[in-house]
Image 1: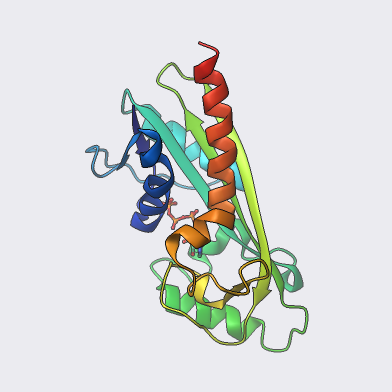
Image 2: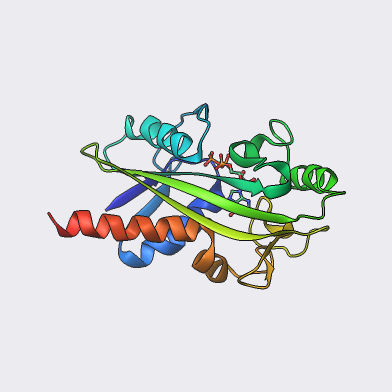
Length: 197
Ligand code: ITT
C-alpha cells in the first residue's frame, strides 16, 4: 500500500519511511507523487493543521495520505513557538536562525522545560480519517549540541535519552520522539481498522 506524506519537509518523510517501510508500506513524499500544493496552515492546533495538510493532498490522489503537524512548546514561553515553530523566525528562516532566536528569548529563563508535540492525520482512499498525537519532554539547552536530525533538535535535550535529539541516531530518536509516538499510535489504529475488514 502506498502512503503519500503531505509535507515539503524531506526529514519528516525520511523518519516516517524508516518506521512504516519495514511494515510493507511504500512511503513517498508529495513531490515524488507529483503533487505540488502549498497549503496555508491556518489552524490554531496541531491536529487542525495536520488535517488541513492531509485533506489538501488527499483531494489530489487515490493513495493513503499522511500529514504531520508538529512543533516545540516551551513552558517559560507559555507554549510558544507551538504551532508557529516553522515560522517562528519569519518565513524562509533557516534552522540556525530559529535556534538563535529561541536561545535569545530564553536567555534569562531558568525554567528550561519544553516538549515536542506531533499530531498526525491519516486519510484512507475512501475518505476515512484517523488522528493521533505524540509528545516528548525535555529541556532547552543554552547552546546547540550535535549534528543529526533537523529543526530544534540540537538544543532539545531529551530527559529519556540523556542527550540532545541531534546527538541521537535516527532509530534512537524515533523510538521516543513525538513523531515516533504519534506514528506508533497511528500504526496500532490502522492495524485494527485494516484487520477488522
Ligand atoms: P510541512 O508543514 O511541509 O510538513 P514543516 O517543517 O513546515 O513541514 P511543521 O509545520 O510541522 O513542518 O513545523 C514544524 C516545525 O517544528 C519544523 O519546521 C521544525 O522547526 C520543528 N520540528 C518539528 N518536529 C521536529 C523535530 O523532530 N525535531 C526538531 N524540530 C522539529
